[in-house]
Image (cartoon, rainbow, N blue to C red):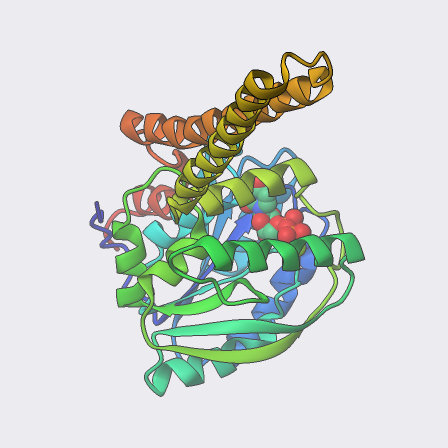
Length: 326
Ligand code: UDP
Ligand code: MG
């Protein structure tokens, strides 16, 4: 899948940043990346993946690119979601090491030299663990913590708690990720599945400096469902067990009613328990059918084999076209 890019030599580091309507923060981000870039002892590229922004994000990046040739802008054809944008970035990054960070400066770029130092010492993955989650509502913190607890209980490859996507990965780790073919991309789970020697550093997560979060609870529920179903078939088994238990309980109660009727004659009461039984059982059935549906839906999406993202414009390639073979 790797395309030949002869325009410039491979940089030491790629910094991959998904961008969706971040015009308000981009100037500050670019300034801080610039300062950090000065301190790096090697070549780097800033790979911005524009995930269908409808504000001035692309214009700001393109303007900055005039001053800073390290900037590369990959424009997706529409909004595909952060996971797809990151996948696009990882596939196009050329660096020996790749740092993944959010555009909203919740992940301080000043930590990149420390991450590089760990990579030089031999780590394949440098995970950034949040010591605090400043500026996030208590509801988000509680739901996030519950989600991690749930997913780590049922998933086959546990996800480290309190780590986001802010991380450094070695070339071979990125290649391994790029080889994962699934369409439903639940990155946190995929990172965990790939594994590799990992070092964890702690940092204080800053609040988003401007603009607003691009997540809403519906998206988070979707992500959670993705996380659960793409990394475990245990919920299917749970449905089976639940169904068996319910059916067993229903059968026992039914048998008991028959015996009682034979012994003491028909009793009119029991209507309420009958209704309760029926609703309970149909509830269990619907639950199991729904669960199956979740998996079947995913099988359907996978069999379509659609690409995860579509790149509409790649500043790198425009560049090679304008200045052929200098
Ligand atoms: N993002 C994206 N596509 C989307 C939503 C978000 O590329 O559909 C990017 C966004 O620009 C940011 C990162 O993903 O760089 C994290 O988004 P956000 O800060 O809104 O999420 P939160 O930090 O609140 O989880
Ligand atoms: Mg954020």
